[in-house]
Length: 97
Image (cartoon, rainbow, N blue to C red; front, side, top):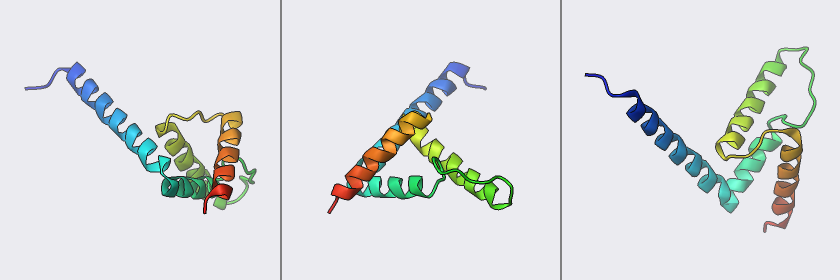
């Protein structure tokens, strides 16, 4: 017997909501912010790079992973928002002991 579709979608929605919350909780701690900053710093989100060689695929993969994490945290992925986010993270990083 198959389950009604609305139950599956509600379960998926609940699971996604829990996962999004887990991302916010994890990256909301001091240690989590340091890890998030490291991910963003190495993700080529705002750094220009040439797509003329094989390493561009690796860089694009890192970029996509960072965008996924930001999306799961409910953060916008437009450049202005990312610039403000990264500047905020840099300021917080400078103020950490």
